[in-house]
Length: 362
Ligand code: NAD
Image (cartoon, rainbow, N blue to C red):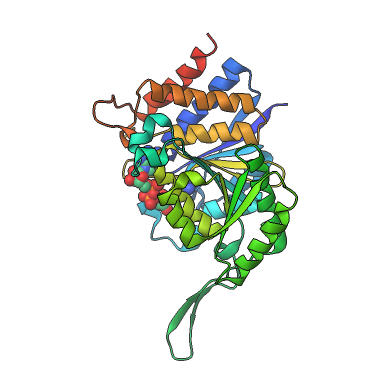
């Protein structure tokens, strides 16, 4: 059966990198027989400019009809003065919530060819392969009550609520253990159980879930220590499972271990395997329109889509191998370029990946 993919290019470099990822999907369709149909929609600032809303009804409808959504990025200076509810970034939270994508998978993988691009010593990061599983639809980013109130003495007070129910913790923990079974079978659960009751419950539930996975080793770590360990000895980690806010921060830290934010994909999954796939970077207004953005994070997001939503693990591997092949050829966009290496544009990098995919067939 033909699978439907909704493509949401978004703002800034989003359309540039998504065009290359869509070309990869198109190559898989024409050359590898992948039964996939692409539809396009508006999101973020691009949607606001047309409909006055960052996440129009039409986009929500298309997202629900699709098997997977490929998103570029949203945001830009021109929309920064809008009220929060109309800002492009609001569309991300809305899409995640409406699709119920509670598990955000962010791999931090260091391609050996890029070891020198990391800010850490090559021996500390060589072979790095971490999967961060971040809870995405709960916790302090969604908890109520929230807001800014004025106290009796006239002073204003901001407040948010960190809240997790057992079922929310359990389903993301299950996802982490299942993924660990396809990898090195180690899960590290990150919390702040010594201070926050909500994460004391988090620790208890994750420990209970671990009982169903005797073949996977579970460790617990406080978030401050985890932040330190990620730069001290990152290779100790296999799968990290953590709350929405801790995962937000730790996954960006882990991303930098690999050298460039332009290399890292992500997947956000719901119970049924439907997913939202996007590079972890933003819309990069500083380089938008110049053709210099690295499209590999978005192309690798397509590989994750093939693996987790389209049930095409072999094609997922092909895309990852094609990315490895272009790096072997020495092709580098500006963000991962070192002296003496040829610099390619966004389009040239995308074309090289498609050529590498085709080369495997000839
Ligand atoms: P950013 O990720 O857009 O950019 C950070 C830095 O990384 C910039 O110097 C940028 O040029 C560089 N960079 C990012 N992606 C790159 C790529 N593919 N190739 C080469 N270099 C790349 O983060 P920011 O500057 O903090 O935010 C810019 C806008 O993006 C803001 O409006 C922000 O709200 C939005 N944002 C959106 C998302 C999303 O759509 N998921 C995520 C983060 C930020």
